[in-house]
Image (tube, rainbow, N blue to C red; front, side, top):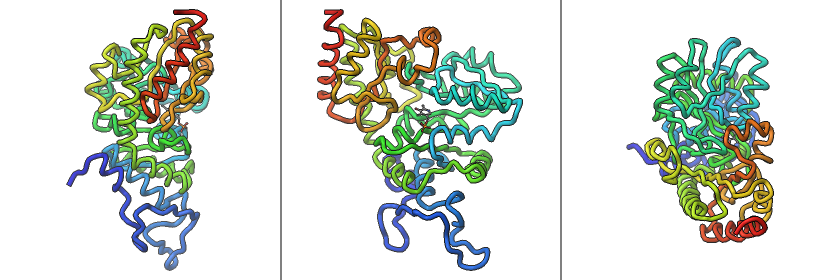
Amino acid sequence: MKYHLETLAIHAGQDPEAMTGAVTVPIFQTSTYAQEGLGQPRLGYEYSRTNNPTRQAYEQCLAALEGARHGIAFASGMAATNNCMYLLQSGDEVLVSDDVYGGTFRFFTKVMSKFGVKAHFVNTSDLAEVEKNLTSKTKLVWVESPTNPLLKLTDVRAVCKLAKAKGALVIVDNTFMSPAFQRPLELGADMVMHSATKYLGGHSDLVGGILATNSDELNEVMRFHQNAVGAIPGPFDCWLALRGLKTLAVRMQAHAKNAQAIADYLEAHPAVRQVIYPGLASHPQHALARTQMHGFGGMISFEIKGGIEEAKTLVESTKLFLLAESLGGVESLIEVPATMTHASIPRERRLEMGIADGLIRLSVGIENSQDLIGDLEQALKKAVSKTLV
Ligand SMILES: *Cc1c(COP(=O)(O)O)cnc(C)c1O
């Protein structure tokens, strides 16, 4: 029988423990395993960098949620991204969404460039741009959809078709949607990458990363390097991530319901210039969001009238929305990309991209939506009291 995502989240990889029947997977906090005889490890466990039962349960569960055969876990999202680079060699080229996570941009420009891997940053929302920039040297297309903080979507199905025609692999950073709302492998991607720090863990209490793929061949390369390079998560972090996965489906529904209510509220507010949320009919790719995703997520960006001063007052006035970087936890967060998450991008380039000084990003949590709207209401009033209305 084929189970649904909500059921897989509770059961995949998580049979009751064999000795005691414990219904939660134990934290196997061990580095090594006693062998039954020379060259006879029990059930294949020899050393915890190579394999650990808690990690294995987490990998199997996430793989099941993504509709994948294999899950491969890492110590952070960036470690998972780095592991994908062992598919490449010096001289290879990569196409990368131009609005990717800042750490991914830094990784390609400051790290991979030293090893002769050239990244071309293109607007992957524009299929003609993708086609134009795919060459015989392109080994990999790295897509993030929706992007951060502008929530631009890429048509993953279409990009996969274009890449496949040129023999390039497609990896999708699925951090913003999680498998509850988007399953890139079903859209044709070769591999999915997650920062488990965000929605998968979901409680802002761990840093982790994970890959998922249906390809035995890619899995073999990823597994070999997971062990050979060694950026693995510890058993306790795997246990926390697995615990997070159990409630992923209900959390994502709650995030999305709150985010939709807040996006509607903000769009009608006189102090707000523009609201970006894939669930709004005003989002330029709302139609694509409807066909590619199963929900619109918990991230909203909006521009307050005025500029940096108004944005500063707003984010310093909210009480429930905590002023912090990161996203995807049960608590609501607020930040100003221009001065926080995206400060490393020169102002001119930021403005070119559409990241205004007064742009504000919300990671909407699972608190009561009326309480959250009330919090924004009082903060918006303070922010614009001097300049507007
Ligand atoms: C946070 C994040 C990453 C990096 O993950 P870490 O766990 O912080 O290493 C990559 N991509 C996206 C979209 C992210 O939000």
